[in-house]
Length: 462
Image (cartoon, rainbow, N blue to C red; front, side, top):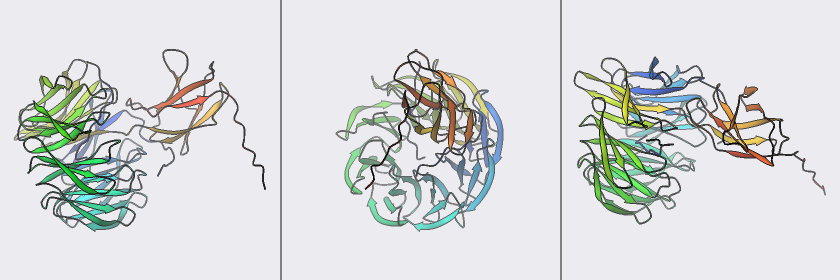
């Protein structure tokens, strides 16, 4: 069955457009071998690997798609990757004296990356311009996740062993408040267009509700046994809580913050969930039964289980929702791998080996491009315009939507650090709609371009 863009949450200033890897690639973080596997998504196979550090835990790609950061837990370092050539090691940053770096989060402008160090009980702040640690902030006991809010005002740090959330004021790089959560908090989830955040408490089987405007705890919602992660509907009206202890998914109405019973049964020891853009279906990785459960979220039922690799952990849908990628940790002598599921048929179409001793903990792709402006606007039909934004690739294309059922695909005539120059096709009518399409299927926001001549503003003076 066909789906579209995923909405998935996992305890994972505007800049000019820039160009980078021309390929259609994804990345597998391998905690077992210390490698980052670069996957050719068209051929569904590994293209090459990049050595990072001991026990890499998470990969974070900046909005520009130029740089990526990989936390190496046992090495106490963060690897910086240059993505312009498909991925090469650019720098290694020491962030802790011993093991520790895990969760990563960046400010909306991509200027700073926050690193949770679960052994040092600190958060390191990396300046992405100088590629150095700007400051180190003491937090609570065993910080296992850090999450910067969409406005870039606060970073929220989940401290698992003392059951708190440290609130960091990003302007001052200082903890300004400690919120009491439940037992063994695991994740701080911020949903789009909601003023309430949710803390997943694995030890107390509940969610702590946090008012983001006041940074105050405002409630508690009981869920299933040992909740570990959250997914949500595209409109943020439904919250799906993955319960590893009770092998179920709890559904929460975010308008009332009430649990909608009964829970949805899944496989053994579920770890993560992804929801389709239409919010009709969900996929759940079951680490204990080596399966992925397909859920009908309207009927709140499990449709089927798909056998994948040993101990599946994280999962991600591609932008067109044609394929689901499942990263498996592996078990015993069975190494981890990346399983590819055809979403239209709900069948495994490929298992991508990632080497002996592999423990694939994350699969990720490049960010969708961001289109910020089209200039001039209005512009005459058939003229050349500038598209400004970020996250564009060497092989990005511009789509022009006019009267016909299908867009006209146009290759930019020039690409530079300021954006894309494109010669528009001639069109009839008063306007067209344009966007940018990357080779992996990710597309930007759409902007309406009006037909006509821009008139410069003349100030009257005085």
